[in-house]
Length: 207
Image 1 (spheres, rainbow, N blue to C red):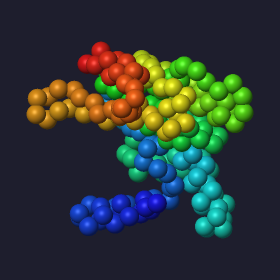
Image 2: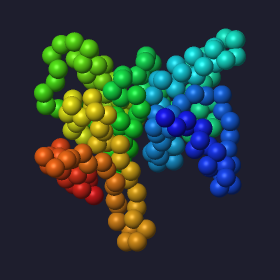
Image 3: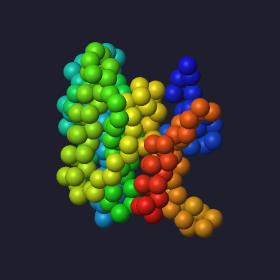
């Protein structure tokens, strides 16, 4: 296991400037988008929870209120609005926002949609229920900001293997100006990843 701090050292060697923040977060749990002139930053509730937890354990003093943590994040990201999704512990199967949502051009929000056979009982079933609740919170937040929702179908088996089709990278191809997306594809010699093909076609239908 390599510490995330090792990447900070590599970046510093390139001459990149760093800024220390009194926040505890993972990059995949913060996402940004622009709606008109408004820069909006979405963050998972664990950003608040973990910041307060680390603050208490390292500083030995009362942790700042959630509103102050959100204000710090807003200033650090130069955002006009910070939207916190989920106030409790994020589900084990969706511990980062980039496993649950993906802003796309045209005010579209892609959201993970759990499909197919699901566990009926036990811890596995509970984890799927927790993921479903979190995804409903993601949809609610996106609809509040006027996004059109599209589903990125993902099986329960994918979630348990930490395979997230939505964890993709949209960009403009500099060579030809074509809107392009890099998305994961999970397959082996025994089967074709049909869900990946379906999701690929969905993204292509959006341009």
